[in-house]
Image 1 (spheres, rainbow, N blue to C red):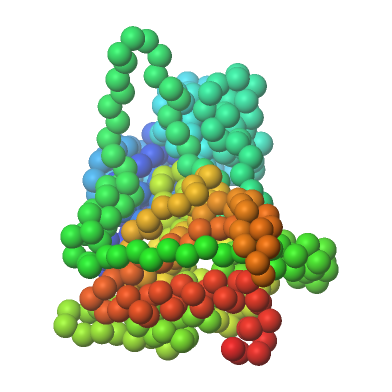
Image 2 (tube, helix red, strand yellow):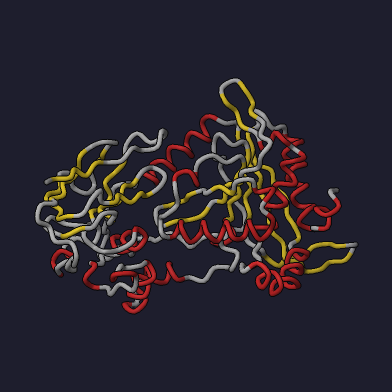
Amino acid sequence: MRIEVKIPPLPESVADATLAAWHKQPGEPISADDNLADLETDKVVLELPAPGSGVLGEILIPAGSTVTAGQVIARIETSGADTTQAPAPTASAATDNAGEAAPAGPAARQLMMANDIQAGQIAGSGRNGRILKEDVLAYLAAAQKPAAVAESATVPEEAAAEQPASPAPLTGERAERRVPMTRLRARIAERLLAAQRETAMLTTFNEVDMQPVNELRQRYRDAFEKAHGVRLGLMSFFVTAAVAALKRFPAVNASIDGDDIVYHSYYDVGIAVSSPRGLVVPILRDADRLGAAGIERGIADFAARAKDNTLGLEEITGGTFTITNGGVFGSLLSTPILNPPQSAILGMHKVQDRPVVVDGQIVVRPMMYLALSYDHRIIDGREAVQCLATIKAVLEDPARLLLDV
């Protein structure tokens, strides 16, 4: 008996997908729900579970092909198959192609391909010998490859996610490397161009004295972690301050739909994080109801799953406002680009000690530049400036949140 392996229904907004990698090869025993392959859309990487147990008979569609919902890509032979003890893949099957046959997670495979590493070179520490990203990083560190430096570089504890993997430097005189653009990178390029072409984007800047927030974090860091089981970072302060500002200036939380302006009574805040595939923006739903602990838990979860490419499509769809933190990579000032159909995005930057004047005295304070990019079609300059000033005021005097002033 044969079982056809078909591409499952794709989300309404996704027309097709790329068959990124096969995890099983013809002749290998498989069990129901084993991950057969990875499907890469322009938003997420999806795992394709086996529809039944047996032996993989043939692969009809090779890795790298574009596929659509319902398409048959392989067949499973079930007659006489003994799946009680599935043998481990042979060395040749595991090492012929790190992107296809390696028992590795998506993030690990991406890093392995970027650095020309075969699966047989790495011992996996995950379940059933699965290769994790940490295993690849450890291998790179042991080999003293330049990519390891970029991957393991220390960033501030407030970082929402790790830096994405970068290919190893080219060697040789005037060398070149040509690789196909991933679907996510192509989608990012498309959306960024559309944002510049279809919106009237402007940016207003301000700076915030981070000393009050730093003092609160130092004072309550241990108690917060003991009570809630999560570290107290910067992002919970910024999300809370942004929500307070959005409540006062509804247009900044609105969007344009055709000839209509859509105002939202909810505050779904996107947090831009880096993944091995590029930038993704998972959404903190109803951020105004989460509290500091809920925000920190949500962001920590997003960061971990962005690293492993396990975010669901519904988690990166929607959102009414976005926050991006270039400061974790050392950016002192930048102009964030809108994430349509949202009308505004807040850019955080590096905290740097600078001399400032406070009460007529020159003092050194930890300062951060803030940037608010906005769609001038629905947000006036006055609203944008006052919205950013509100965020600054709340961060510099968090007691305002308690007093609602």
